Image (cartoon, rainbow, N blue to C red; front, side, top):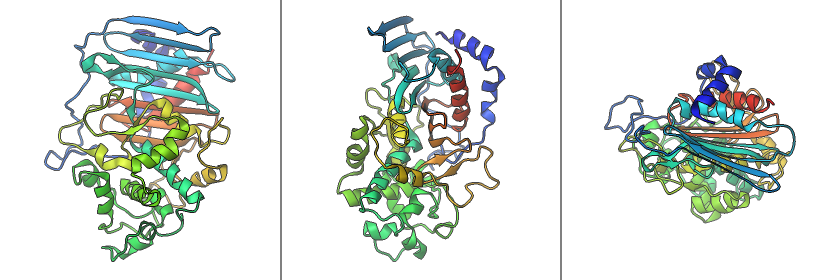
Length: 427
């Protein structure tokens, strides 16, 4: 389906709804602040942008198996490309063209470099698609195997591994993390000695946002960012308030290494990625590997290196959807955590996450974002990156990953997903 056809379909079927998604409130996530030596503006002017001069030959190919269980379609134009794979669903209709039309109209048709989606029903793959260019300078189209930055969706990987260790008794959820990490005080703030693993997972520890540390080259690695936490003065008594802070998950990364005796990436790969057949990896801010989408980044930044366990992974939309689907009871499996553990992770924090309360009703559990409509998963935002994965009440797991600046607020992807699912449910 070409760009004009996508736009016509969206205007004819969902109309003004697509235009209004930008009004949704935003959940807390990473800042896009510049390095300290640069301007204090939060503008994300970047050294890499999509180039309209890239010549792409228009092609369309379709391959169908016999019997027709899997259909693969790819097409490209001078402004955007798309590839999709639709696997026969296990129940109910699904209009993949209509679903893709909504997502494309809200992302690449508005200037994003690339976007990718994956839809699972009860753990079974229903649909995957990609739009735009994996690398516009090499005229390389995005495919369903393109890996995107997933930003704070990375926290789900860390949380799952930590909760596995809680289940086997290697980590105590209600005990101070410093004791279990083997770090002794005295600390700059004596209250830090009482911060529990639960409070790290739920962002109720009191650690500061620390944008300068993570996004203005305050440190060079996530391990340094974690160690910086030991010198902080907590913003409130642990457990009494909510403050979204990447420091929490960098400290959990140190704890994971200490308990397993492995480096963080190897521990996640062994405990989470390999059982789910996921091929994600940690990535630097620049120099993406083959198969990684190009994300525009401003000079001198190093946020991927400093985020690590809090936001440094790249993965395909299907990878992210498989991770989320593995946590829902109705999924086909494999399961990384038992149902009681996941239920505990989905209990919202007993303190307000915003004042006044957010309009979309979101709250936070243990490494999971919980939304007012009953959906749960996580969002992620860093420079030129928007990501969202949702386990929805209707049995669908939907992941949308974007390389680009649209939408301006990542939470707006929830409205896009709702519209796309509604369109995909139409005959």
